[in-house]
Amino acid sequence: MTNRSPRQRSSSSSSSSSTCSPASSGTLAYRGYAPSMTDGPDRAVSVLYASAGRAAIAPDYLGLGTGPGRHPYMDARSSTSASLDMLRAAHTAARDRGATLGRTVSLTGFSQGGQVAMALGGELNRGADRRFRLGMLAPVGGPFDLVGEELPGMFDGRIDPRAAVFYLSFFLTAQNRLQPLYDDPAEVFRAPYADRVEDLFDSEHPAEEIAGKLPERLEDLLTDTWYQKLRHPSGALLEMLRANDRTCDWKPGRDVRITLYSATGDRDVAMENTRSCGRQLADHGAKATVVDQGADADHYKSFLRSAPSIARALPAAR
Image 1 (tube, rainbow, N blue to C red):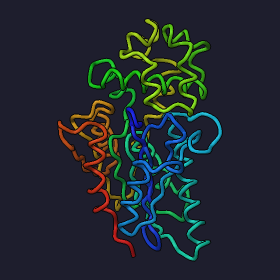
Image 2 (image 1 turned 90 degrees about the horizontal axis):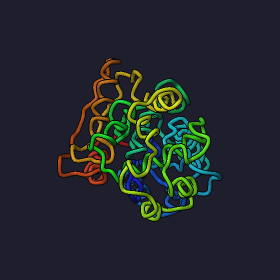
Image 3 (image 1 turned 90 degrees about the vertical axis):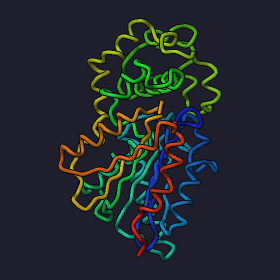
């Protein structure tokens, strides 16, 4: 889920005249950090995959880059749709330039992008676009289990308190625009944060600016009522969480290679999210290799350690 602080988005890459490798990015609060706008980690990893002979695609999600409105953060459906649209656009752009993209698609993504990569894999596997065939999945540090692992981790100490404040503030204000959870921010957020939190997440503020205007603990951010609601979600809140919790709940084809990357030392997206994803895939008869980048690897370092392995694992361009 990382931003420049705290989570990084992942990306989707595609390969020219053979394999496609889409890469989706992690959490971005500021539209100017989108892959289309700046030379950041999303472009860098795309260049890495392109250097291996693939067409590398890094989508902007809704509300980022030059797109209108605010980013619907952690809405897997819209981010998956944006990524699929980018894959289609790459197919058209290649054709217009006299090139051909191969049918096989390799998907990777970091943090929020890991969730999106899994969701996009499911869509391709179900035949969302017959021009593309899923060949490889390699998400890194994805928040795959919001109800069972990620949200509880924010209250039991597995998630860094400052990261929990940032992510929950972004998540609740974004999701409230999609499915109303509250009528007034003061129902959820304590003063003085209730008066500023929605404006901070308007896609115009970098994460490093936002962090200085929020407290360091959830106890200081949330009202008592919402502190307990988030510890024991129910009703519309639980329904919304579960709607974004199903990205690993599908049956991949037998020839799809799946490697799930994470790190024991990750305090932004607890590694239990990745293990939970592996169990869901196993329930559908799929085998996923889980790679632990170590207790000394934080969220971003897990991405840095995983990217070279993912590049080496990409199917050969033909």
